[in-house]
Image (tube, rainbow, N blue to C red; front, side, top):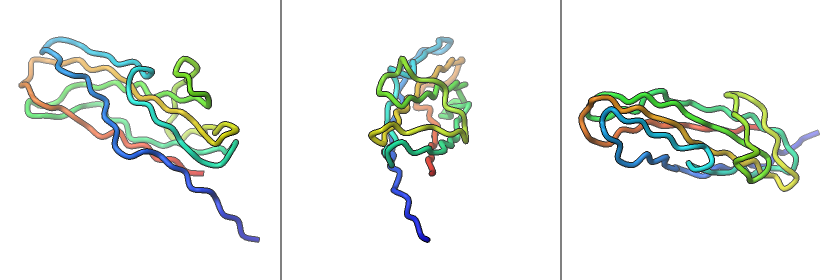
Length: 126
């Protein structure tokens, strides 16, 4: 007996933008105000969500500490979300959706101005 799994879809590149932050200052973006995206797959399926979360943003003056806030829910409501465990199972809803939100916080030291970035990579598998 053969079986085929439906494709799980995630969007491409999305950016979490803290804007301009002065040296010595902190900035936070809540998960509900940050990047939002959704997993699309088979109705009521379970999927495994894995991710690589950076702890530093790097740029011309070194690095900035980054603390991610990655949460998900089967309803499209960030208030109902809970933290996503790396390698954990998440349930798609009856329409085959699961919603994810990424926020985080940074504290900028006395460093050179410039663009500081890192990749937060998410993968989903049945």
